[in-house]
Length: 519
Image 1: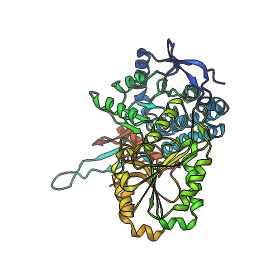
Image 2: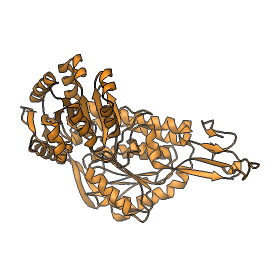
Image 3: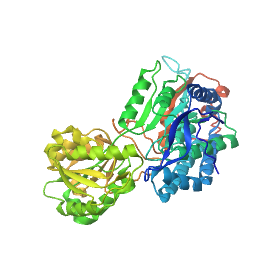
Image 4: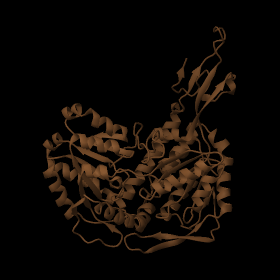
């Protein structure tokens, strides 16, 4: 059982803690939760980052099989704390126990996925071009390259995924897999969960003989601690999941450093869904029920929540009627924290007040403390195109229905900001007849779905959970799946080196037995 102390983890030691940065708050009741948490001091921030920098040479040189053992040990320790997570989590987040246990499984699953990746070893993309000393007119040198870790990484924990995108979530797992020590910054919404998971990481590091400083967790009020970590010259990359304001602030800080560094920020998305008339042949009410389930899953607090629906004029009347009845009967749910709840109320009210927007339906139930209720609004495609503010994310169980011609919808999709996902419901004939629409959707998102709905992100090697700005800061990256490891690496080449001095991945005998590009 983890004894919650309310202090940061500075490598394998705990901070002293003098300046309070608050307590966990039960979003369903407003009740404060013990213990009190204390902000890391500037000296402790410096110590944590310096420990990470000192650990980097040794940790980055550890073979993949040992890094894999470390990741597996973290998963085992988190699983051992499963009951603690399931007890503390609902109190801090308002999420049900089943969701916390499911997210625990996902977190451990992705840790083991990265363990398997680095144990096998081919992810480094080893490339070997052997020397041709007799080549004319000039000899060809021996050149070999592979991906190498960047250095210490700052990871910001997310509010909406207190496990899978937090202390030991995908950013931390992929950075550690790449060979990069991590300095994590806890989210104020779930400090107790952060402490439980951080203790698991530290225990795993000790059990597997990892260097001190391979992982630290810092608490801090406001943005002072996080910004100071990003400014530190030893930090070489940043992983972030959260608001556009938070992500762009970190991007500005990282870009203003004497040595700019990459920030991989997943920020905002309204995830357009286009439903063409042929899709309704399978049953409009059934489709409305599936859509409503996606819209209200997790009280709409997923980054892949379908916040925008396009319908062609004259189609989908039964779909909308069913959706209206579902929304009106929909139950409110407790949101993750008071700030998110307030932002949802303000953003949905702002959308409703835009000229041309009609409130199609709202839940008839009264909201309790910290709760958000379903809502659906509608607008013409022409009004949508005329009001850029209608692209705003509501981040809750609300959506905007846009109706127009195929040409109007294609124009509206083309005008959208970058999105994590886009979804198309249509027949195969409609796909073939609307290549411009399909192309517009593909150009605006990282993951294009045919049928189904965007909530539910499969953790696998082919997943892309990213997209053009502002859904992410770098549309070439993904924060889910094995490709996420490449965010925290860079390519490096060795020219003319003797075989014994090369990394094992590049030696002639291929001692690791990995797949390589050889010429």
